[in-house]
Image 1 (cartoon, rainbow, N blue to C red):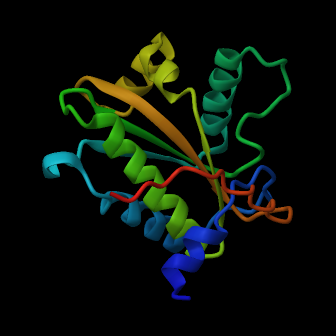
Image 2: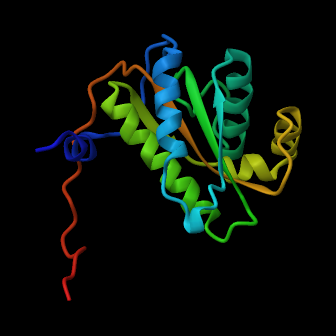
Length: 174
């Protein structure tokens, strides 16, 4: 089996991370994979916000926790030291799909590089909130953006979960 297929079949969401920061060289490779994701009409509508600052990561985690309605002290980012927040320009009719492809490419790159990853939602609510507007302004990102998802990234501190059995009747040949 070739390496690409192996990574696709073996990639799993990791929900426990070591506190060690991901080396910049590896982080840059994961981000580059996201930037090369397929996009509708080649518009490249996705933007990746790489969060490595602990304080900023905590703010983002807290906002995500509040949106979900979880109790204080719960980290929806499972201790991952890096959060890659993917947003996409709403002017593109394929914005959410472009962002999803970006996240998928980055998950597969992370697996290939020996890193763990997990896609976490609620980015839409974050970016649509006052918190999100301030975040984009703080980063000097202008335009009408929609949050697509967060990719948690780090070194796994657990065994990867087993793959769920694939559901039947999901492929039809014509």
